Amino acid sequence: MLRSLNRIMASASITLNNGKTMPQVGLGTWKAGPGVVATAVEEAIKAGYRHIDGACDYGNEKEVGQGIQNAIAAGVCTREDLFVTSKLWNTFHKKENVQPACEKTLSDLGLAYVDLYLVHFPISLKFVPFETRYPPEWIYDPSAAEPKMIVDPVPMSETWSAMESLVDQGLAKSIGVSNFSTSLLADLLSYARIKPAVNQVEIHPYLTQENLVRFCKMNDVAITSYSPLGAGSYVSINGATEDETIFKDATMASIAEAHKKSIAQVALRWAVQQGFTTVPKSSQVERIKQNIDVFDFELTEDEMKAIAGLNRNRRFNDPAAYCGAAFGQFWSIFD
Image (cartoon, rainbow, N blue to C red; front, side, top):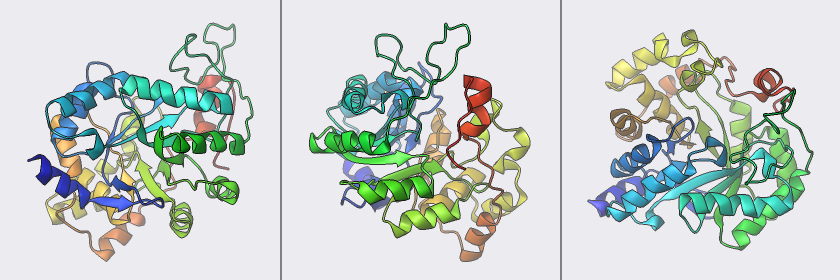
């Protein structure tokens, strides 16, 4: 059974620019809370997932690690079968903080290395020690009279050099970035000793980011699409409305019906068929299983174009839209 699952997932992988392989569909763990996420991770691995996407800022890496350890202990997989991603938070961009942040993540996960470590945002915030608050989140001092995030500029070249050292020491097999625009990525590529393997960005049928995708492919930087199902995770935090969901879209519904698949499966197939890796989130076992069941059908060229034609340039995760109101300091990275 184990060998069979591993063969299936190996065939649904991409090869990164450093020769490492990365499974195309992973389990996203953002907003997966205590008491839920460990079970979700374990069930996902049992269902055939070999890619788990997490981050310091999600505040659940101990539980993610427990799910991984449970699956390994049950004989479902080995550590070497898995591809585990985590992310460097904004408060840890200074060179002296990068390795301790990675080591804290590894300790919480119970792992000796991560397969991929990403710079979570191109935003550097004032350092918050682990013992003061972890994860530190956006606001520097929540108890202040006027709590807000405090920007503390750090050159990306400094942060990236420290990220490269993680690879040198075997703490991360690959490194990359998240939420990087074309211009930010072009600048990083101009000096990187170790090229970013991945750019994890928001992509879904209402935000296709075709120019960024083209640039990444041209420079052999793989794309991971987060929020691949669009608005869902953002409705509860007032970042989207129910009317913006792809699950009410007539084009998506028509294509799903033609293939006898769900709208979610069509959206995920659209992502993997472009060569992306993608990290849908769910804590429900049946949806977890459904989200990885996207390799037994293919969208036609016309269907791929029809989905791309739904683009509204609707970005749900945009610091310019929420930093000022939620964290007391405007900041923009996509302009």
